[in-house]
Image (cartoon, rainbow, N blue to C red; front, side, top):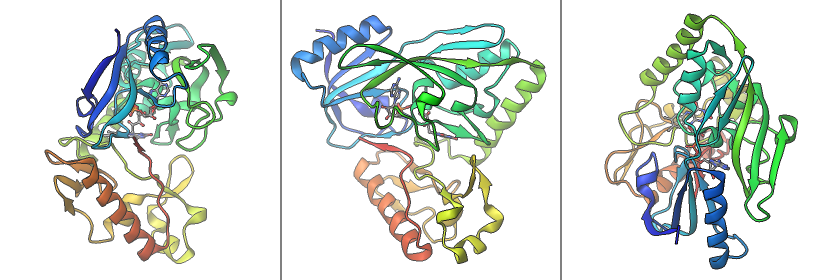
Length: 311
Ligand SMILES: Cc1cc2nc3c(=O)[nH]c(=O)nc-3n(C[C@H](O)[C@H](O)[C@H](O)COP(=O)(O)OP(=O)(O)OC[C@H]3O[C@@H](n4cnc5c(N)ncnc54)[C@H](O)[C@@H]3O)c2cc1C
């Protein structure tokens, strides 16, 4: 039996929250992945409850746990070439950023300090500082977990948009295996200084001393913000990568910063973050998320959309 049982998900979450997974496996290769899927097929032939986990920096696991299989992706490897990088999906984004810089390859500077795996970043089209994972992506290879067929998609076929890709909806039964990116040789010092700038920005502004999942809600495109609210917050519009009103600014204008529910707290440092002060439960976090949604709906007539995934 490759699959383990009753594994605490809090140990695999950046939030340190969550009940147990009924079945759990860590895979280090495509072969291990296929073997695990074949074993699980006996338990759940329709694969109705299978979840692929990267580094757990964007998933809130519920307190009751997960009644299915969690596959933790540990498939690693980076191959740098003159103008192309091929990377396995279980690599940390930071390892990709740093190793590309070591080879003087430009293309990932925007991602300096971005937590999580390459697979997680592709699925959610992660972005920061005006850049997105899709910008220099050439091809993604994935495995359909039901048919076990390997699929290669070019950038267009991945249908990227704001924190979205084909893997989030139509292809959510696919395990992203690897990706190819285009890069170009550039001045090493300049690449490193851009990365360092982004890392310091994050250290200064994010409450990284506590377990968290980053921004809980997506920023709001200006077109859907009521005119009077837009006028009030016009100085805070940022390109992310299109004009948005940062949710953090809206929350900061309420009395919600620092609000606690159990050990979960709306961060005072970055109010779109909820932090775990010690033994927060998923239910505490969900209560705070609801409070934020209701307050901003009432005060600014905006509907928030979760950026994190709730399992
Ligand atoms: C402090 C902090 C700052 C952050 N800043 C940013 C930011 O600036 N911009 C931003 O976009 N995000 C940000 N995030 C969110 C997060 O880092 C990204 O979404 C990251 O890309 C998620 O990667 P992960 O490996 O942790 O994915 P996980 O949290 O493990 O999973 C996220 C989703 O991706 C799916 N997934 C993961 N790997 C695969 C795979 N191989 N195949 C198929 N599906 C997969 C999972 O099923 C899940 O639905 C931040 C998070 C934190 C904690």
